[in-house]
Length: 125
Image (tube, rainbow, N blue to C red):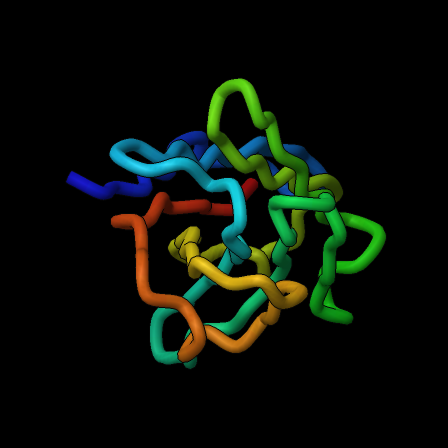
């Protein structure tokens, strides 16, 4: 069974950090693009970062540049999202998604066909 499983969410104070993980099972992330998306209550889902697994090239939404870092561990078939300097507006359910593709990654959620179940990030003092 093909699965993406996110983990690492939680309650963090403003200014804190979190590291989210997206582990793939049942398939290898090689030759995929992987995206991280988030959705806050009452808001549309937005793409925050993505990585082209084959070469490690990345992209970020302007709102998270310099605070979010995406990375991959090929041996663990896992993609990470390091979130630093958390702000209240970062609070959301974070999802990872994957698409088998030879092209550079995209932040468009409609492009992806495999999705994880999401992990909640809460930012509060």
